[in-house]
Image 1 (tube, rainbow, N blue to C red):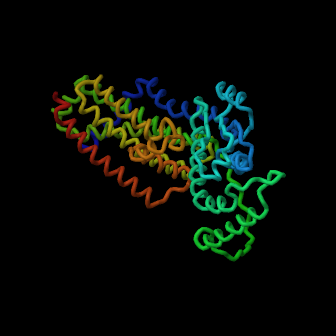
Image 2: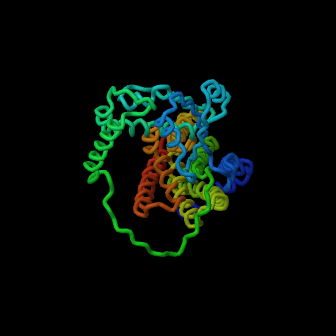
Image 3: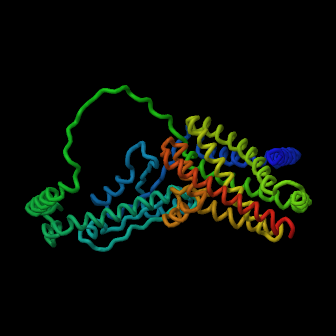
Amino acid sequence: MTVGFVWLTARRDLRRRATDPGALLLWFAIPVLMGGLMTLAMGGRQGPRPQAHVLLVDEDDTFLSRFLASSFRGPADAEFPVRVETVGRGEGEARIAKGDGTALLIVPKGFSEALLEDQPTTLELITNPSETLLPAFVEGFLDVVADATFYLQRLVGDPYRRSFGDRPLTASGRHDPAATAAFAAQAEELSQTLEATVFPPRIQLVTRLEKEKEEAPPQSFGLLFLPGLVFMALLFIAQGMAEDLWVERESGTLRRVLVAPRRVSAFLLGKLMAGLVILGAILAVAMGLAALVYGIAWPAATLGWAFTLLCGLFFLLVLDLTYLFASGRRTASVLGSMLIFPMMMLGGAFFPFEAMPPWMVAVGRLTPNGWALLQLKAILAGSAVPLTLLATSLALGLACLGLFWAAQRRLRGRFAIG
């Protein structure tokens, strides 16, 4: 009888949802519309990769300043290709103020001398506020340059100062050949000292002919945002479904369930089943379109669908329990929004972790949706570790059981009769 009541409750909920096709279409449109707009914004599946455009003002014009500019470019197939354009200070400031460029980097005069003499120097970076991800990449690159310069200074700074010191340049503008030879000898001695620990061991090269593998098709930059968009849609839809508990209470359905010879847990389970049917259909459409547009392998898309559906059950139970402890329907809606918006902000739904500050990433990875989002990324990329995926799914399953137990007790108690 209980199983039959679960099915009747689920079927009743699905029929009620069918009477409001506008709401159903809106739920289906959330992931499809957001994903479609993101894909169009990023140029589609075959669209060009975003390119950082750095305007460089090189007031030092030395070997080290030119080396800094060339190090930005990197390989042509880099994930974030960078185009460096040398400009004057006035032109650069005017262009970055108009949003023409990702960032303006100003290398001051005396940069190389300060670097070699271990003196303080400052690189001025002005970023474009209308861009988010690429300016963060440029800032991160300069942080790496600063760290590398510090350690390089510890290694070769003293030998350089001992060799050149205050010795004047020759008439041709070069260092004294004897000082240059002395510095080269000290650098060679240092490299031999560090060779055993810094340089990789010598290996024997063995050549073997293998069948050339086909290159994977290029993936759109929009794929970086896909998992976050999926979890954003899950949270919005789960919030809308959780509000139905207050609809049931205000219509008197819960009171009739309490006096009927049926278990409240069966009633709640039936509503969850109906919610999972709708979520499963929405996620199937979203994952199917993602597989077609972004070239995701169908086994990975199917596994991603199953894992995301489990996450959807978890979010639905979390919001159900939140709504059950509210004192009114409006209060429940406010509490739900106060819960899901910080989760989306920190958990990589609004912005991918790659574009967030390190401290926010550290916090976001601890949120339930951020933790699950990392696993979904690995699934869609085909790099998920089976044991990690199994452990994550078991943890989510156990959390769902605990939340269901708490929700049905609350549903049976003060919420239903208060």
